[in-house]
Structure formats: structure tokens, C-alpha cells
Amino acid sequence: MLIIQKKEGVKFTQIPFDGSSEEFTAVLGGHVDMTLTGIMYSVKGQLRPLAMSTFKRLKQFPDIPTLIDLGYDYYNDSYFGIFGPAGMDPTQVEKLEKAFAKAMDTDAVQRVVDNTAMIPRIMGSKEYTKFLEDGWVAEIARLKDAGLLKKVATQPR
Image (cartoon, rainbow, N blue to C red; front, top):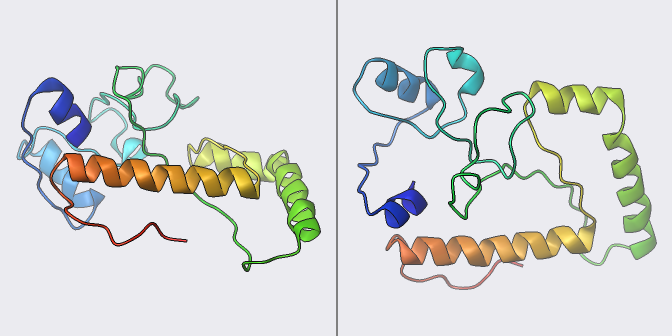
């Protein structure tokens, strides 16, 4: 919401809730104008989706634009990674990367992806490490720019 606020020169009042069910109730009750949450499946016609914060449109909702589609240089996907100990044997890493990539093509995994409206982005260890590091730097810059963060000790390693 901070990205939209800044680009459009508007001010949103952020209201913290303990969970999406409270947000859902507040929107339906007319107590708040909108929410940014992952409650798409629970609303089924009760709310009008304005945009998705995913990297690309979901195949389950092809008509809902992403924030990127709408001209905002931002997305907020959920990231899931598999981690091993530092210094892991590179041949074992390569073997695991191939096995995980192969597993992504199975019907069982595809059903989970479809049922949870996830967008798979398969990355190897080096690519994922860079992706996380770059994302950390970008998120810190956004938070500082919004005045929500004054100081960060170091980038996590």
C-alpha cells in the first residue's frame, strides 16, 4: 500500500488486524474501504478484487490485474525455499536441485500449486540466494523511503 500511496500522492490509514477474518468482516461491514490480504477464496463474490500483489496473474483469476500490470513496480509473492547446511557438498546440492525440479512436474505437486493459487518459480541454490539478497536490499530501501525504517544493522547471511 505504501508503493501506491507514494506514486498516487494519496494517504491510506493503516489499521492492524489480528487476522484476515477480522479484515474480511471490517470490509463487508463497511468499517474499512479495502484490505490487502490473501482472502480471495473465502469471499466468492462478496468483495471486488482490485489487484493482485503477485509477480504475474494467477491462472485461477486471469481477469484480475497485478500491481505490476497497473504500473506499480512491486510484487509480494510468498517464498518457500529448501535449505541445507552452509558448506554443503556441491554435488549433493546439484542432485537435490534436479530432484526438486523433477518433483515440480508431478501431478501431485501441480494439484497443490493449483489449489493454493501459487506461482512456481524454480531456482537453483545460487539463483535463489541472489534473489533473496536482492529482495532484502529492495525491501529495506522501500521501508526507509516510506519512513518506516531508520537503520538496519546488516544484510542477513
